[in-house]
Image (cartoon, rainbow, N blue to C red; front, side, top):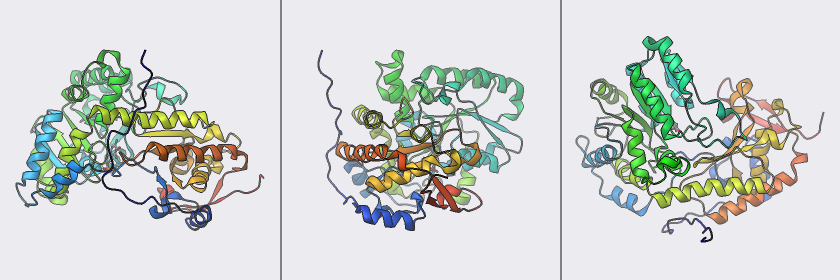
Length: 454
Ligand SMILES: *Cc1c(COP(=O)(O)O)cnc(C)c1O
Protein backbone atom coordinates (compact mmCIF):
# COMPACT_ATOMS: atom_id res chain seq x y z
CA UNK A 1 0.00 0.00 0.00
CA UNK A 2 1.29 3.47 -0.80
CA UNK A 3 1.54 5.70 2.29
CA UNK A 4 -1.08 8.42 2.55
CA UNK A 5 0.33 11.57 1.03
CA UNK A 6 -0.17 15.06 2.40
CA UNK A 7 -3.00 16.90 0.68
CA UNK A 8 -1.38 20.14 -0.43
CA UNK A 9 -2.68 23.59 -1.25
CA UNK A 10 -3.28 23.22 -5.02
CA UNK A 11 -2.10 26.74 -5.79
CA UNK A 12 0.98 28.89 -5.48
CA UNK A 13 0.79 32.42 -4.22
CA UNK A 14 1.15 35.38 -6.59
CA UNK A 15 -0.24 38.23 -4.51
CA UNK A 16 0.17 38.50 -0.74
CA UNK A 17 -1.31 40.65 1.98
CA UNK A 18 0.34 41.24 5.36
CA UNK A 19 -1.10 39.15 8.20
CA UNK A 20 -2.07 41.34 11.18
CA UNK A 21 -0.22 40.11 14.27
CA UNK A 22 -1.27 42.21 17.26
CA UNK A 23 0.62 41.48 20.49
CA UNK A 24 -1.05 39.88 23.49
CA UNK A 25 -1.25 43.29 25.21
CA UNK A 26 -2.86 44.80 22.12
CA UNK A 27 -5.37 41.97 21.92
CA UNK A 28 -6.31 42.48 25.57
CA UNK A 29 -6.93 46.17 24.95
CA UNK A 30 -8.82 45.56 21.69
CA UNK A 31 -11.24 42.99 23.09
CA UNK A 32 -12.04 45.05 26.17
CA UNK A 33 -12.71 48.08 24.00
CA UNK A 34 -14.92 45.94 21.72
CA UNK A 35 -17.08 44.96 24.71
CA UNK A 36 -15.87 41.34 24.39
CA UNK A 37 -17.79 41.00 21.12
CA UNK A 38 -15.70 39.81 18.16
CA UNK A 39 -18.08 41.42 15.63
CA UNK A 40 -16.90 44.76 17.05
CA UNK A 41 -13.17 43.99 16.64
CA UNK A 42 -11.55 45.74 13.66
CA UNK A 43 -10.29 43.19 11.08
CA UNK A 44 -6.84 44.79 11.18
CA UNK A 45 -6.58 43.43 14.77
CA UNK A 46 -7.46 39.84 13.76
CA UNK A 47 -4.77 37.32 12.80
CA UNK A 48 -6.95 34.36 11.76
CA UNK A 49 -10.38 35.46 10.60
CA UNK A 50 -12.78 32.49 10.73
CA UNK A 51 -15.93 34.58 11.18
CA UNK A 52 -17.34 33.45 7.82
CA UNK A 53 -16.50 31.78 4.52
CA UNK A 54 -18.90 34.18 2.78
CA UNK A 55 -17.33 36.68 0.41
CA UNK A 56 -13.87 36.08 1.87
CA UNK A 57 -12.44 34.01 -1.00
CA UNK A 58 -9.00 34.74 -2.47
CA UNK A 59 -9.58 35.01 -6.21
CA UNK A 60 -7.38 33.35 -8.81
CA UNK A 61 -5.17 34.98 -11.43
CA UNK A 62 -7.68 33.76 -14.02
CA UNK A 63 -10.50 35.55 -12.24
CA UNK A 64 -8.55 38.82 -11.97
CA UNK A 65 -7.63 38.54 -15.64
CA UNK A 66 -11.28 38.03 -16.60
CA UNK A 67 -12.22 41.13 -14.62
CA UNK A 68 -9.91 43.24 -16.78
CA UNK A 69 -11.77 42.35 -19.96
CA UNK A 70 -15.26 42.87 -18.50
CA UNK A 71 -17.84 44.71 -20.57
CA UNK A 72 -19.49 47.29 -18.33
CA UNK A 73 -22.31 48.07 -20.77
CA UNK A 74 -25.60 48.84 -19.06
CA UNK A 75 -27.61 46.56 -21.35
CA UNK A 76 -26.62 43.34 -23.09
CA UNK A 77 -23.16 43.10 -21.50
CA UNK A 78 -20.89 40.41 -22.95
CA UNK A 79 -19.93 39.59 -19.35
CA UNK A 80 -23.53 38.62 -18.62
CA UNK A 81 -23.38 36.26 -21.59
CA UNK A 82 -20.27 34.67 -20.07
CA UNK A 83 -22.03 34.22 -16.74
CA UNK A 84 -25.19 32.90 -18.37
CA UNK A 85 -23.16 30.38 -20.33
CA UNK A 86 -21.31 29.15 -17.23
CA UNK A 87 -24.52 28.81 -15.20
CA UNK A 88 -26.30 26.99 -18.04
CA UNK A 89 -23.37 24.62 -18.55
CA UNK A 90 -23.07 23.73 -14.86
CA UNK A 91 -26.75 23.67 -13.85
CA UNK A 92 -28.61 23.00 -17.10
CA UNK A 93 -31.03 25.81 -16.13
CA UNK A 94 -31.68 28.08 -19.10
CA UNK A 95 -33.01 31.25 -17.43
CA UNK A 96 -30.41 33.16 -15.41
CA UNK A 97 -31.26 36.16 -13.24
CA UNK A 98 -28.25 37.91 -11.67
CA UNK A 99 -28.51 39.48 -8.19
CA UNK A 100 -26.08 41.29 -5.93
CA UNK A 101 -26.05 38.43 -3.42
CA UNK A 102 -28.05 35.45 -2.18
CA UNK A 103 -30.63 37.25 -0.08
CA UNK A 104 -31.66 39.43 -3.03
CA UNK A 105 -32.36 36.24 -5.00
CA UNK A 106 -34.43 35.00 -2.06
CA UNK A 107 -36.43 38.20 -1.83
CA UNK A 108 -37.21 38.18 -5.57
CA UNK A 109 -38.28 34.56 -5.81
CA UNK A 110 -40.31 34.58 -2.59
CA UNK A 111 -42.01 37.86 -3.59
CA UNK A 112 -43.40 36.00 -6.59
CA UNK A 113 -44.40 32.81 -4.73
CA UNK A 114 -44.92 33.32 -1.00
CA UNK A 115 -48.15 34.76 0.44
CA UNK A 116 -49.47 34.93 4.00
CA UNK A 117 -50.19 31.39 5.18
CA UNK A 118 -47.94 29.58 2.70
CA UNK A 119 -45.43 26.95 3.83
CA UNK A 120 -41.92 26.41 2.43
CA UNK A 121 -40.28 23.13 3.48
CA UNK A 122 -36.51 22.54 3.48
CA UNK A 123 -33.91 20.60 5.50
CA UNK A 124 -32.92 23.77 7.36
CA UNK A 125 -33.54 27.26 6.03
CA UNK A 126 -30.59 29.62 6.26
CA UNK A 127 -31.41 32.63 8.46
CA UNK A 128 -31.89 35.16 5.62
CA UNK A 129 -33.97 32.60 3.71
CA UNK A 130 -36.24 32.09 6.70
CA UNK A 131 -36.46 35.85 7.33
CA UNK A 132 -37.42 36.55 3.70
CA UNK A 133 -40.20 33.93 3.85
CA UNK A 134 -41.50 35.20 7.19
CA UNK A 135 -41.35 38.81 6.00
CA UNK A 136 -43.98 37.88 3.40
CA UNK A 137 -46.16 36.13 5.95
CA UNK A 138 -45.09 32.60 5.01
CA UNK A 139 -43.71 29.90 7.25
CA UNK A 140 -40.30 28.27 6.77
CA UNK A 141 -40.57 24.60 7.78
CA UNK A 142 -37.36 22.76 8.78
CA UNK A 143 -37.47 18.98 8.25
CA UNK A 144 -33.83 17.94 8.67
CA UNK A 145 -33.13 14.30 9.58
CA UNK A 146 -33.12 13.39 13.26
CA UNK A 147 -29.44 12.35 12.91
CA UNK A 148 -28.51 16.04 12.76
CA UNK A 149 -29.28 16.57 16.45
CA UNK A 150 -26.50 14.26 17.74
CA UNK A 151 -23.21 16.13 17.45
CA UNK A 152 -21.16 12.98 18.22
CA UNK A 153 -22.85 10.82 15.58
CA UNK A 154 -20.63 10.15 12.55
CA UNK A 155 -23.58 9.83 10.18
CA UNK A 156 -22.13 11.05 6.85
CA UNK A 157 -25.18 12.98 5.56
CA UNK A 158 -26.58 14.96 8.46
CA UNK A 159 -27.96 17.49 5.98
CA UNK A 160 -30.55 15.01 4.68
CA UNK A 161 -34.21 15.95 4.67
CA UNK A 162 -36.63 13.63 6.47
CA UNK A 163 -38.57 12.32 3.47
CA UNK A 164 -41.41 10.72 5.48
CA UNK A 165 -42.19 13.96 7.28
CA UNK A 166 -41.92 15.84 3.98
CA UNK A 167 -44.38 13.51 2.27
CA UNK A 168 -46.79 13.79 5.17
CA UNK A 169 -46.58 17.60 5.12
CA UNK A 170 -47.12 17.72 1.37
CA UNK A 171 -50.10 15.41 1.61
CA UNK A 172 -51.70 17.40 4.40
CA UNK A 173 -50.88 20.92 3.18
CA UNK A 174 -50.35 20.66 -0.58
CA UNK A 175 -52.46 23.76 -1.36
CA UNK A 176 -50.34 25.93 0.94
CA UNK A 177 -46.92 24.92 -0.50
CA UNK A 178 -45.93 27.05 -3.55
CA UNK A 179 -42.38 25.66 -3.69
CA UNK A 180 -40.21 23.11 -1.95
CA UNK A 181 -36.54 23.63 -1.11
CA UNK A 182 -33.38 22.00 0.15
CA UNK A 183 -30.11 23.66 1.22
CA UNK A 184 -26.84 22.13 -0.01
CA UNK A 185 -24.73 21.90 2.03
CA UNK A 186 -26.96 22.51 5.05
CA UNK A 187 -25.30 25.65 6.42
CA UNK A 188 -27.54 26.13 9.46
CA UNK A 189 -27.06 22.47 10.38
CA UNK A 190 -23.24 22.78 10.41
CA UNK A 191 -22.39 22.67 6.70
CA UNK A 192 -23.48 19.05 6.57
CA UNK A 193 -24.03 17.52 3.11
CA UNK A 194 -27.16 15.98 1.62
CA UNK A 195 -26.73 12.58 -0.06
CA UNK A 196 -27.61 12.09 -3.71
CA UNK A 197 -30.04 9.33 -2.71
CA UNK A 198 -31.82 11.77 -0.41
CA UNK A 199 -31.92 14.50 -3.06
CA UNK A 200 -33.50 12.00 -5.44
CA UNK A 201 -36.17 11.01 -2.91
CA UNK A 202 -36.92 14.63 -2.02
CA UNK A 203 -37.28 15.51 -5.71
CA UNK A 204 -39.65 12.55 -6.17
CA UNK A 205 -41.86 13.68 -3.28
CA UNK A 206 -42.09 17.23 -4.63
CA UNK A 207 -42.77 15.94 -8.15
CA UNK A 208 -45.48 13.55 -6.95
CA UNK A 209 -47.27 16.47 -5.30
CA UNK A 210 -46.68 18.85 -8.22
CA UNK A 211 -44.54 21.21 -6.13
CA UNK A 212 -41.69 23.11 -7.87
CA UNK A 213 -38.30 22.13 -6.39
CA UNK A 214 -35.76 24.93 -5.88
CA UNK A 215 -32.31 24.23 -4.44
CA UNK A 216 -30.49 26.74 -2.21
CA UNK A 217 -27.21 25.78 -3.88
CA UNK A 218 -24.58 28.14 -2.37
CA UNK A 219 -22.22 25.22 -1.67
CA UNK A 220 -23.18 23.00 -4.61
CA UNK A 221 -19.56 22.03 -5.31
CA UNK A 222 -18.71 21.12 -1.72
CA UNK A 223 -21.90 19.05 -1.49
CA UNK A 224 -21.17 17.27 -4.77
CA UNK A 225 -17.64 16.52 -3.53
CA UNK A 226 -18.85 15.09 -0.21
CA UNK A 227 -21.30 12.89 -2.15
CA UNK A 228 -18.37 11.58 -4.19
CA UNK A 229 -16.38 10.91 -1.02
CA UNK A 230 -19.11 9.45 1.17
CA UNK A 231 -21.66 7.79 -1.13
CA UNK A 232 -20.15 4.64 -2.64
CA UNK A 233 -22.46 4.55 -5.70
CA UNK A 234 -21.19 8.00 -6.72
CA UNK A 235 -17.48 7.53 -5.94
CA UNK A 236 -16.34 6.94 -9.52
CA UNK A 237 -18.17 9.87 -11.11
CA UNK A 238 -16.45 13.20 -11.83
CA UNK A 239 -17.67 15.86 -9.44
CA UNK A 240 -19.01 18.13 -12.19
CA UNK A 241 -21.25 15.25 -13.32
CA UNK A 242 -22.51 14.74 -9.79
CA UNK A 243 -23.24 18.46 -9.54
CA UNK A 244 -25.13 18.34 -12.83
CA UNK A 245 -27.12 15.31 -11.69
CA UNK A 246 -28.15 17.23 -8.58
CA UNK A 247 -29.42 20.17 -10.63
CA UNK A 248 -31.15 17.76 -13.05
CA UNK A 249 -33.43 16.74 -10.15
CA UNK A 250 -34.70 20.29 -9.59
CA UNK A 251 -36.65 23.05 -11.32
CA UNK A 252 -34.20 25.77 -10.38
CA UNK A 253 -31.76 27.12 -7.84
CA UNK A 254 -30.90 30.19 -5.81
CA UNK A 255 -27.23 30.86 -5.21
CA UNK A 256 -25.18 33.18 -3.05
CA UNK A 257 -22.03 33.35 -5.19
CA UNK A 258 -20.03 34.46 -2.13
CA UNK A 259 -19.51 30.77 -1.30
CA UNK A 260 -18.76 28.27 -4.08
CA UNK A 261 -18.96 31.07 -6.66
CA UNK A 262 -15.45 31.90 -5.41
CA UNK A 263 -16.15 35.65 -5.49
CA UNK A 264 -16.47 38.43 -2.94
CA UNK A 265 -19.97 39.49 -3.98
CA UNK A 266 -22.72 38.16 -6.26
CA UNK A 267 -25.61 35.76 -6.66
CA UNK A 268 -28.24 34.48 -9.06
CA UNK A 269 -31.48 32.61 -9.63
CA UNK A 270 -31.50 29.98 -12.39
CA UNK A 271 -34.68 28.31 -13.64
CA UNK A 272 -35.62 25.60 -16.12
CA UNK A 273 -39.09 26.96 -16.91
CA UNK A 274 -39.79 30.56 -18.06
CA UNK A 275 -43.14 30.94 -16.22
CA UNK A 276 -41.87 33.11 -13.33
CA UNK A 277 -39.18 34.91 -15.32
CA UNK A 278 -41.07 38.03 -16.54
CA UNK A 279 -42.32 38.76 -13.01
CA UNK A 280 -38.84 38.18 -11.54
CA UNK A 281 -37.22 40.46 -14.12
CA UNK A 282 -39.72 43.25 -13.34
CA UNK A 283 -38.91 43.01 -9.64
CA UNK A 284 -35.21 42.84 -10.48
CA UNK A 285 -35.38 46.12 -12.39
CA UNK A 286 -37.25 47.73 -9.53
CA UNK A 287 -34.53 47.26 -6.90
CA UNK A 288 -31.48 45.42 -8.28
CA UNK A 289 -30.77 46.54 -11.82
CA UNK A 290 -31.23 45.75 -15.49
CA UNK A 291 -31.62 42.00 -16.25
CA UNK A 292 -28.10 41.70 -17.70
CA UNK A 293 -26.34 42.79 -14.54
CA UNK A 294 -28.78 42.53 -11.59
CA UNK A 295 -26.82 44.07 -8.74
CA UNK A 296 -23.39 43.15 -10.04
CA UNK A 297 -20.66 45.03 -11.87
CA UNK A 298 -19.72 43.27 -15.13
CA UNK A 299 -16.28 42.52 -13.66
CA UNK A 300 -17.99 40.65 -10.81
CA UNK A 301 -19.96 38.59 -13.33
CA UNK A 302 -16.72 37.72 -15.19
CA UNK A 303 -15.03 36.63 -11.95
CA UNK A 304 -18.08 34.54 -11.06
CA UNK A 305 -18.23 32.87 -14.48
CA UNK A 306 -14.66 31.65 -13.90
CA UNK A 307 -15.18 30.90 -10.19
CA UNK A 308 -18.15 28.57 -10.73
CA UNK A 309 -15.85 26.23 -12.63
CA UNK A 310 -12.87 26.60 -10.30
CA UNK A 311 -15.08 25.44 -7.42
CA UNK A 312 -15.60 22.11 -9.24
CA UNK A 313 -11.87 21.40 -9.62
CA UNK A 314 -11.28 18.13 -7.78
CA UNK A 315 -7.80 18.98 -6.48
CA UNK A 316 -9.25 22.18 -5.04
CA UNK A 317 -12.13 20.27 -3.42
CA UNK A 318 -9.81 17.61 -2.00
CA UNK A 319 -7.77 20.41 -0.42
CA UNK A 320 -10.93 22.18 0.78
CA UNK A 321 -12.16 19.06 2.55
CA UNK A 322 -8.68 18.38 3.94
CA UNK A 323 -8.57 21.80 5.63
CA UNK A 324 -11.71 21.05 7.64
CA UNK A 325 -10.61 17.49 8.41
CA UNK A 326 -7.09 18.58 9.44
CA UNK A 327 -8.40 21.24 11.79
CA UNK A 328 -11.10 18.95 13.24
CA UNK A 329 -8.55 16.19 13.92
CA UNK A 330 -6.09 18.71 15.35
CA UNK A 331 -8.74 20.14 17.65
CA UNK A 332 -9.71 16.72 18.99
CA UNK A 333 -6.03 15.89 19.49
CA UNK A 334 -5.59 18.90 21.81
CA UNK A 335 -8.76 18.03 23.74
CA UNK A 336 -11.28 20.32 22.04
CA UNK A 337 -14.59 18.51 21.33
CA UNK A 338 -15.96 19.18 17.84
CA UNK A 339 -19.12 18.35 15.87
CA UNK A 340 -18.44 15.24 13.79
CA UNK A 341 -17.98 14.65 10.95
CA UNK A 342 -17.03 18.10 9.65
CA UNK A 343 -18.24 19.20 6.22
CA UNK A 344 -16.05 21.42 4.03
CA UNK A 345 -16.62 25.04 4.95
CA UNK A 346 -16.46 25.00 8.73
CA UNK A 347 -15.68 23.15 11.93
CA UNK A 348 -17.86 23.60 15.01
CA UNK A 349 -16.23 23.56 18.46
CA UNK A 350 -18.46 22.24 21.24
CA UNK A 351 -18.07 24.87 23.96
CA UNK A 352 -20.79 23.26 26.06
CA UNK A 353 -18.79 20.03 26.23
CA UNK A 354 -15.47 21.82 26.88
CA UNK A 355 -16.90 23.98 29.68
CA UNK A 356 -19.55 21.83 31.41
CA UNK A 357 -19.44 23.98 34.55
CA UNK A 358 -20.44 27.13 32.64
CA UNK A 359 -24.25 27.26 32.27
CA UNK A 360 -25.93 28.60 29.12
CA UNK A 361 -26.91 31.73 31.04
CA UNK A 362 -23.17 32.52 31.18
CA UNK A 363 -22.57 31.98 27.47
CA UNK A 364 -19.83 29.30 27.28
CA UNK A 365 -19.47 29.84 23.51
CA UNK A 366 -18.82 33.55 23.91
CA UNK A 367 -16.28 32.83 26.67
CA UNK A 368 -14.49 30.34 24.43
CA UNK A 369 -14.50 32.63 21.39
CA UNK A 370 -12.99 35.48 23.40
CA UNK A 371 -10.34 33.20 24.93
CA UNK A 372 -9.34 32.07 21.41
CA UNK A 373 -8.93 35.69 20.34
CA UNK A 374 -6.79 36.47 23.38
CA UNK A 375 -4.64 33.38 22.86
CA UNK A 376 -3.82 33.75 19.17
CA UNK A 377 -5.86 36.51 17.51
CA UNK A 378 -8.44 33.99 16.21
CA UNK A 379 -11.85 35.40 15.28
CA UNK A 380 -14.63 32.80 15.42
CA UNK A 381 -18.39 33.03 15.76
CA UNK A 382 -20.50 31.99 18.73
CA UNK A 383 -23.46 29.85 17.62
CA UNK A 384 -25.35 29.27 20.84
CA UNK A 385 -27.21 31.18 23.53
CA UNK A 386 -25.88 34.59 22.48
CA UNK A 387 -27.10 34.12 18.90
CA UNK A 388 -30.32 32.17 19.55
CA UNK A 389 -31.24 33.07 23.16
CA UNK A 390 -33.64 30.59 24.71
CA UNK A 391 -33.97 28.73 21.39
CA UNK A 392 -30.34 27.55 21.47
CA UNK A 393 -29.99 23.78 21.66
CA UNK A 394 -26.17 23.65 21.64
CA UNK A 395 -23.34 25.94 22.72
CA UNK A 396 -21.05 25.97 19.68
CA UNK A 397 -18.27 28.13 18.26
CA UNK A 398 -17.80 28.11 14.51
CA UNK A 399 -14.52 28.25 12.62
CA UNK A 400 -15.57 29.03 9.01
CA UNK A 401 -12.74 28.83 6.49
CA UNK A 402 -12.21 31.46 3.79
CA UNK A 403 -11.39 29.76 0.48
CA UNK A 404 -7.70 29.61 -0.52
CA UNK A 405 -6.67 32.17 2.13
CA UNK A 406 -4.80 30.41 4.94
CA UNK A 407 -2.03 27.79 4.75
CA UNK A 408 -1.39 24.68 6.80
CA UNK A 409 1.21 26.54 8.91
CA UNK A 410 -1.49 29.07 9.77
CA UNK A 411 -3.70 26.21 10.93
CA UNK A 412 -0.88 24.78 13.04
CA UNK A 413 -0.56 28.10 14.85
CA UNK A 414 -4.32 28.18 15.38
CA UNK A 415 -4.18 24.70 16.93
CA UNK A 416 -1.38 25.86 19.27
CA UNK A 417 -3.65 28.68 20.42
CA UNK A 418 -6.53 26.27 20.96
CA UNK A 419 -4.28 23.96 23.00
CA UNK A 420 -3.40 26.91 25.26
CA UNK A 421 -7.11 27.67 25.78
CA UNK A 422 -7.91 24.02 26.53
CA UNK A 423 -5.10 23.90 29.11
CA UNK A 424 -6.47 27.01 30.84
CA UNK A 425 -10.16 26.14 30.56
CA UNK A 426 -10.71 26.09 34.35
CA UNK A 427 -10.17 29.83 34.35
CA UNK A 428 -13.09 30.38 31.94
CA UNK A 429 -16.13 31.14 34.11
CA UNK A 430 -18.39 32.65 31.46
CA UNK A 431 -19.61 36.09 30.39
CA UNK A 432 -22.44 38.43 31.26
CA UNK A 433 -24.20 40.87 28.93
CA UNK A 434 -23.87 44.50 29.98
CA UNK A 435 -25.67 46.10 27.02
CA UNK A 436 -27.87 44.60 24.28
CA UNK A 437 -30.07 45.82 21.42
CA UNK A 438 -33.68 44.62 21.01
CA UNK A 439 -32.90 42.09 18.25
CA UNK A 440 -29.96 40.32 16.55
CA UNK A 441 -27.98 41.03 19.68
CA UNK A 442 -24.97 38.92 18.73
CA UNK A 443 -23.79 41.60 16.29
CA UNK A 444 -23.60 44.52 18.72
CA UNK A 445 -24.10 43.44 22.36
CA UNK A 446 -21.40 44.27 24.92
CA UNK A 447 -20.19 41.70 27.43
CA UNK A 448 -17.79 41.38 30.34
CA UNK A 449 -16.04 38.30 31.63
CA UNK A 450 -17.14 36.76 34.89
CA UNK A 451 -14.01 36.64 37.01
CA UNK A 452 -15.07 34.82 40.18
CA UNK A 453 -17.39 31.83 40.71
CA UNK A 454 -20.60 32.83 42.50
C1 LIG B 1 -25.00 32.86 2.60
C2 LIG B 1 -26.22 32.09 2.39
C3 LIG B 1 -27.40 32.69 1.92
C4 LIG B 1 -27.54 34.19 1.74
O1 LIG B 1 -26.64 34.71 0.85
P1 LIG B 1 -25.96 36.17 0.98
O2 LIG B 1 -25.08 36.23 -0.20
O3 LIG B 1 -25.24 36.23 2.29
O4 LIG B 1 -27.08 37.17 0.93
C5 LIG B 1 -28.48 31.87 1.67
N1 LIG B 1 -28.44 30.55 1.90
C6 LIG B 1 -27.33 29.94 2.37
C7 LIG B 1 -27.32 28.47 2.58
C8 LIG B 1 -26.18 30.69 2.63
O5 LIG B 1 -25.08 30.07 3.11
